[in-house]
Length: 588
Image 1 (cartoon, one colour):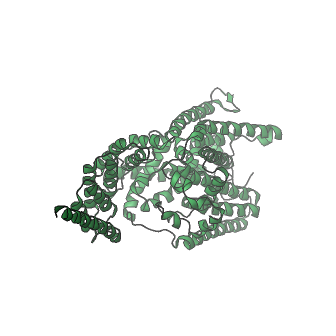
Image 2 (tube, rainbow, N blue to C red; image 1 turned 90 degrees about the vertical axis):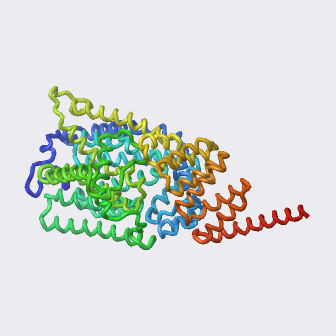
Image 3 (cartoon, helix red, strand yellow; image 1 turned 120 degrees about the horizontal axis):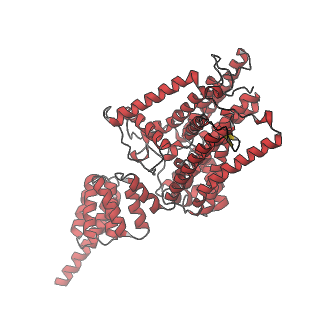
C-alpha cells in the first residue's frame, strides 16, 4: 500500500476513505497491461485538454486591455530588458515606472511574475494573440498538474478526471486566464502550487530527498509568484498530520515529519527574508481599514466566494461587497452562521472522512491570505474571481467525491466508470463549459468588460469611472460624460471622479459645466493640485482671467504642489499685465 495516501489506516485505525465514501477505487495496475493503462491516461488527458482549449480558444483574438495590460505590460519598459531581472528580486523594480503614472504597489513582491512577463515579451513582443496563447497553455499545464494531484490524493481515476473537468471549466477562472495582467500571475502560481504539492506527495511515497528538495524549490517559486502561496506550506503540514504514514516505525515517522516541517519553515523564512530585504517590510500597511473591520467582514468575504463557486452566475470583475463596520444585520450574522457550519462540518469530517476534511481546509486556507490582505485593498478589490484560482482545487475534488457516490443501479459503465456518476459529471462539465464560454467573452474588450461589470454591480463606482476613461480614449467624449455623470451620481463627493468628469465635459465642449465640476472637486479635496490647474485654464479660455487668477491664489497656500500653481499664477499675472498695457496704449 502506498504510504501517504488516503488508503492508509489512520491514528484510530479508521477504514479507508474510499470505503467510507463507497467509492469504487480503480486499480488498473493490477488488472490491465501497462500499455492499456498508458493509453487510458492519454485519452483522459486529451479529453481534459480538448475541453479546456475549446472554452478558452476565443481568447486568442482578444487585445491587450487598458485595464493594467497596456500599463504594466505593453508600456512598462522595466519588463522589456533582460538586464532588469535583478531588480525584480531586490525590489527596485517600479521606481522609474512609477514616475510615468503607474501605481507602485510595494506590497506585491512577485519577481517570478516579472521574469515570466519579460520572457513572454521577448518571445512575443506586443502580439496579444501570442500572449493569450501562452496564458492558455500555462493554464492547461496547471489543469494537468491538478488532475495528477487529484489522482494522488484520491487514488481514483473517476474522481481525478471529474475534479479536473470541474476545475478546468469553472467560470471563476475566466478572469485569471483571459485578463493578461491576471493570467501572468494566477496561471504561473497554479503551476508552482500544484507542482509543489505533487512533489510533497511523491516524497511521501518514495522517501527520496530529491522530491522534498523539489517541493521546497517549487514552494519558494510559488511564494515569489504571489503572496497567497503562503497557503501551500500550511496545506502540506496539514496533510502530513491528517495522513500519518503507517508503513514506518513511530520514530521514523517523527524524523520524517521533522524534516518536512524544517523544510517548510526554512522555505518560508527564506522568502520572508527576500521580501523584507526588497520592500523593507513583510507587509506595508496603508491603513485602508482596521483589523476589527476585517474580522467582521471576513465571514461575508468567505461566503461570497463560496456562493460564486456553487452558483457561478453574474460573475464580474468587481462586486458590491460592503465592509462590515458593526456586528449586526444579515450581512454579518448569516455569513457567520454559514462559517460556523463550515467549521463544524470540517471538524466532523476529521475522524470520519479525513480526505473531505482536508479538502474543506484547502478551500479555507487558500482563501485566507486574500481575506487577510483585504486590510490594505480598496473596497472594489476585496472580492475578486481570481482569488479562488487555487482554492477551487479543494472544492472541485469534494464535488467529484460526491458524484462518485451516486448509485449505479443499472450496473452499466461509461468510459469505464459508473454510468450515473459519469452522466452527472458530463452534465456539470457541459453547464460549466457554457457558462465559462460566456464569461470568457466578457473579457474581449475594455468596453465589453466594463459594461458587464456595471450590469453585475450597478452601484459600483469604479467600472463607471473606467468606462468614462475608455470612451475618452476612443474619442467619444459624449459617452464619456454620461459614464462619469452616473459615477458622480453614486459618489458626489469624490474629488477624482469630479475631476475626471470635468475633463470629459471640457473635451465635449461644455466648458462652463466643466468649471463647475472642477470647483466641486476643489471643495471635495482642497489639497489636490490638478483641479486648480484645469479650472484656471478653462476660466482663461472662457475669458474669465481674473477668476482664474483668484482660483490659483486660493490654491497656493493649501495645495500639495504649490510651486506648480505659483508658476501658473505668475504666467497669468504676466498675461493680465500685458493686457492692461495694451488697453492703456489703446486709450492714449
